[in-house]
Length: 324
Length: 266
Image 1 (spheres, chains in turn purple, orange):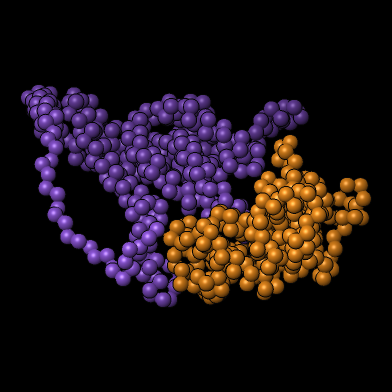
Image 2: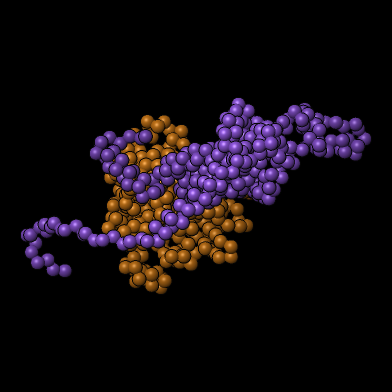
């Protein structure tokens, strides 16, 4: 390569900005017209049919029992997700452990709860009282073992009436949480498998135990993969609380709205009220999910990397390195 | 192994840092190591050369029990790695005991394997605080000292993704040194680096060798082997083909396979 004149430094020159006529999009105008007509037709449907009973709906969708049910729905969603995530992490770790018993058990768990539909599971759990009026903890097969050795055996530590334990609210939470744990286990497992095995190896080579390597190195990196689908799971969970009508759980939004609808014979307005409530709740969750995803992509996305680079530069110029 | 006496550990502190006897390892039916004997005296730098697939990385990973050996014995600092010998019986060590052994053996990987969610200093502080229970202040002081030693004190707050490959590898060296190991294993530490970044990493390793650290280095850097190595072993197809001082082996290779390999890399 030859350089003609090394003494001359290249000078940036001015340039005329491009002025061009933009491409026309006639298709867009057609689409707007079509959609406007469809929207007008839809509005016509909603406003002219008296069966919608908008006024009645507005009067009833904020009544105390509905708000009580709404609070129940939110509580069940939160509780079921917390239990589901914790149990899911445990099942996922068991699934990836070296212990074949743990591996097999966790596989069976996910297999069962993924295969059984939530609606069916909830009905079954609501009716467990038929099968066992009393739940007791003790030695398995005690009476049979007793017969075998010719003694009267009833080795139970403690028991509780099924009716008392499996009251609506907690059956609902438990049923949804058990089912959720199976899905969360798969999500967490995928997240853990997405982490480069070199990471676990480096932690191991430093003398970290398996638990430390998981907690300090693998899981924090798996979070990036785990968080977005967990947001989706939370949204699905919120909607699935409407299935609790199968148990039945009374402290639940859809139950309360349907109850008003059935009592007043104004079924449809209350169904619309349910749709509006779920739209509202899910919208809030979507906003939350957006910020969660932003936070957990730290150090990975292009924008996040640029931001970190700037922080790093600032730290370098600030001379004194310190740990956050 | 019928002759158990042959496998008694050399318990004296003056013995070699690493002693491997007849080490075998297979992955499935592929025999990767087929009888390796190596002795690395304290303070020595042992350079392992060989074509890819010759088993040199696997051997290195056997030394800190990242791979379980199928036959033979490895001692580090007089202690059997991964097992305990009581009389004629060999007992597998519990995970915790193996982890305790690994604490004294530092390892540097070809792909650096820094923890991406921690800054350079946190990477260096992680093991001392989590594994050794060192206080944060103490680990931080020592961490900055070690980063300074590899010439990266001002990059302490940078995350791995903001560092060049050479800088990442030097942080990885500092991270391993933070556990005060008595032995350092290097698994092709410069193979994933751009050519202009290799020098800084090799300088850090030379500095370490001069400080008296016992090192086992798998590398293709012949210059490093000649300058820093106390002994050189050439591996091919799972066996040690030739060993000796780097000067002798490099200048006057005896085995045709060594000659063939050196003619390709020199």
